[in-house]
Image (cartoon, rainbow, N blue to C red; front, side):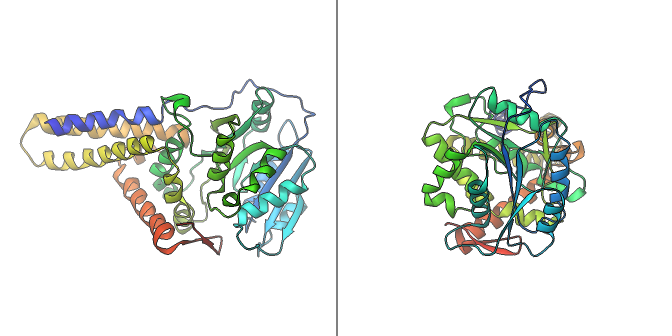
Length: 366
């Protein structure tokens, strides 16, 4: 009986590390004549780049320029970007001790004609009015803005990333009940709005040049310098489909740096998340054990615990993506997928020291 109540306490931890998620204010407006550059690093993104550029064109405010940095693609990424009015920079090779995205973003920043830079991943979409809200969040209270996109799910296999999304968002430390007492792990990678001088100065740190999780290292650099950073989730403003290329693409993308990212999490917060996940595993185990017993009380308590976890997981999931309630109800399936991806990421990061992404082998710092 005591074990069951301990798991109830572990369940409560979930409300602490993902307490309140900030979203961009729909009422925010800004001067339509503000000058900023959008920089999009892209490698083999012919299936995504047009959609992103179209959502940019549909915004109320427009950037002074859109720069697509083609990172040695072997598809029609550059051609499609140029056809959709973007300025294209084509990179021919990757210099020693640089990772691809870092090199692409650095070249885009150097080429930009404005002092305010908005870095976007090629697979994101900006919702109507979203760009205006992103820029106004900077202008109304200057400081780096970083946004984790809302995950729009269209295919069944994407539901498996449920726990990965929750742990990524909660593990950043930006939305906990403890507020500023916990330092966030870095910046969200898909969307960063930052001053050009601040961004280029960060490359004096060699670990930002060659780290697979450059957004974490950049954020840590800014935190060390006491720079102001504002964290948001992109519901109703900024969205993406995570790895729409299929299950293999999904596994590759998540395992690329998930373990490395978890190591950047504030240790007490990491322990809290581990205990919460342990409680979710325990809820399944206790439910199975007590379903085979004839003790109505312990079975009822175990079943209630499992249902509470399911409801809590669904509450979390709807903050970060349009996950289905059945995915939360049968959460052991995405939980097993989470363990598989984490183990694969651990293998790439610690044992192998390499990861594969976009048909390129990436060295992962051990």
